[in-house]
Image (cartoon, rainbow, N blue to C red; front, top):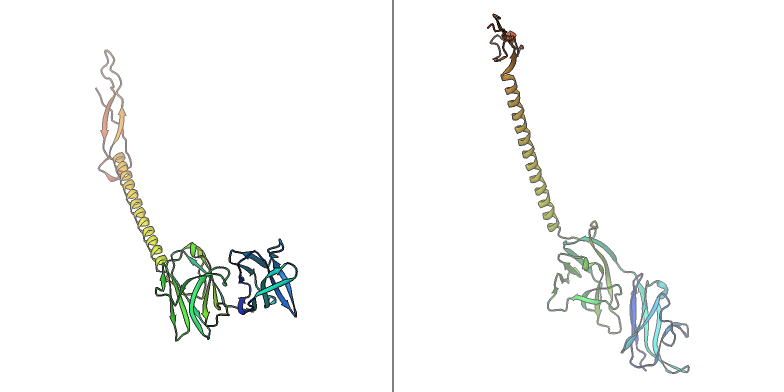
Length: 310
């Protein structure tokens, strides 16, 4: 059996997955070397497939062990293999030297519709291809875009490299809520025994949150919408003021006309004594119109009496 050593880098607080290729129904095991002894962590022979930190998963052609919330304590040498003869012989398929490192973590909250430009400086080394992938576990996340692709644009995502500045730039146009997640910048190494080194981690949340620091994005769409709303509010407010002033002016005109009509004329009932038989004089009920006197000194007297003799 081949016991080729592989170097793998895990990042503190992230998840990493160690994969062993093997087809067959043999019992699989995963252990960590402690001196001259390899202490079992998980085995398909046991019903325990997870102990909280380590989780074993089987497929038709391989089995893998995921380590969640990686810490410095998880660094070391691991072995994965199969049991050839029950209880007597084990064959190691792979030796893994796991290194634990810190990684640059950035968190960004964006609003739907904004554009994001994200730069990832990469380290020195024989790196064949730079890429960006999405997923909580960088060791198994699927690349979205890579520099090696002929078409460096997929939908709203695009990628380009600046060799002089030694960084790759990822652009996302019009982010949506589906873009929420964890992104990793990484590169394949010329050393086939080394796993993909990741040099940047981005946790992006898209919603209605406030914008943080560390990124540049195009906010023109948001500004345009806000400007249109402000203009609409101002126009509606102006229309309301004009309608109110017109209504108030009409109401004042009606009140002035009513007051003028009331002061223009006054009516007084004048009674005339009824004419009795044999009487030389009698009063009748007559109505007369009394206009305002031409003398200003008597303008306050609206009514006066008139006696009519028969």
